[in-house]
Length: 78
Image (cartoon, rainbow, N blue to C red; front, side, top):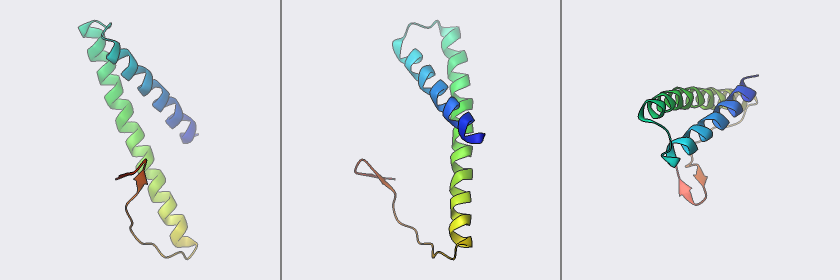
């Protein structure tokens, strides 16, 4: 269930960003959209952190040895 909410939140966040980028919203609507976007970003961040903790726990339970390595996406190290 949380996965679906995460996906929905990400879709809504993308729509908000696109709406803000167009510059067609009034100042009041832009502020409301920005506020909603910040709340969605915070929610998504919490969900990702929870997923990371769960994966780490599952690896530990499976007897896997954990080691930290940089995570790379599209050639960028995070």
